[in-house]
Image (cartoon, rainbow, N blue to C red; front, side):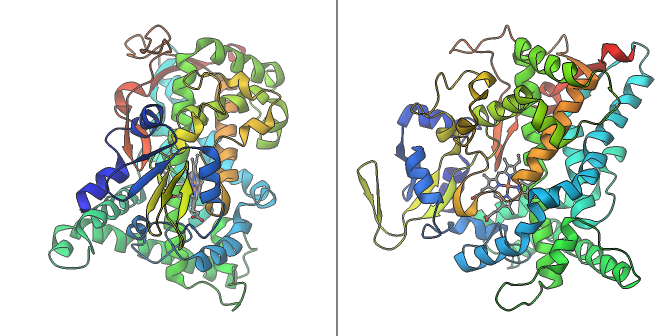
Length: 466
Ligand code: HEM
């Protein structure tokens, strides 16, 4: 049962959710008690209300304490969103932006500049997915832990391996049950140790902040401060150190790989579509080439780079990194979708890839066409990569800021070229006649299957630096 459940939840390959939609349409079953929905109206109806609570699978991720992400309780979900929502408003984001730029785009440029400077040809090959991932950890390290992880600088971070172990243990818990019971606690002792280290690390970060504040430090505008200060709307009680740490770990889990994978798919799709790439480069250079050393901010990019924004939206549509069906439980009284009655307690899975490719919304859904979003802001709302409704991703503004500032600035400052030995490029077409995308795998998120092989690009400084 556990294996069936895990297989059904994870699917067999990264493309399964998308291809299942193309094969089976708006509604189909996966396993004995799981019904997958792809019709946008059905999916929005489920996601818009707490009546369809999250499924039991989320409990596996509650390895420290229940969090905004893991909780199945509508009350706790509402409370946490009220408490933590202020960390992610546009106003708070603007105050956090200098940190986001410093550890995001500016750190990536420093890294790439130093690699290019060392190369006699003034061009170098980078594995972009690695750099995006390390930078994404550094951003959350600075915002959520108030400290420098130095992951990008050192090409590694202890925190990343702890988080990987956390993820692994959550999946093991799904299949093998409580990790603290014998024999699990022996078999999974390394992962359990990582989680205990992560807790100690998180608790220390919050304590350090409290100590600094007591010595007169002005309150920083970051996520850690919101976690420390926020009160329950009813009881006015603050979160416990363990609750703070658990939420912070969930931000590391939810807000790092999602961002770096999204950026990686964007670069990949731009390399597959040279005309789109050229158009995006021309757009940013037509506005900012007189000041190439200036870091384009989120507000500047939002107001002057609609095509790059459309490229992001189209990549997030065609290859949503949120690859697993979002599981919800049919409430008392049952529910009817596409003429099928589903009794109470049936699990429904929201197929984001299905929604993002749905025939009623999207023309030529398998084609990468950023132009579809130009002068069509409304259409962007149909891309459900951040989900929608009452449990929609609270980190989407932060993600959008990080992704747009990184993409706009790297397209401004560097020229990109596919390596000569790249397996995937504009000439290599799939059975639908579109440039074939690199293979992917599903590990909660949709990730490149061979990142070291397929996520490489040659970079050199843009012509106006010469
Ligand atoms: C491109 C980047 C991102 C994508 C595609 C993404 C996608 C999603 C999706 C699809 C959900 C719904 C999951 C579900 O219902 O099972 C979600 C929830 C969530 N995300 Fe994100 N996310 C991103 C970035 C972030 C960031 C940067 C943070 C925070 C730092 C974050 C924190 C969360 C949290 C806490 C939830 C749970 C919300 C709830 O259940 O009420 N995410 N995200």
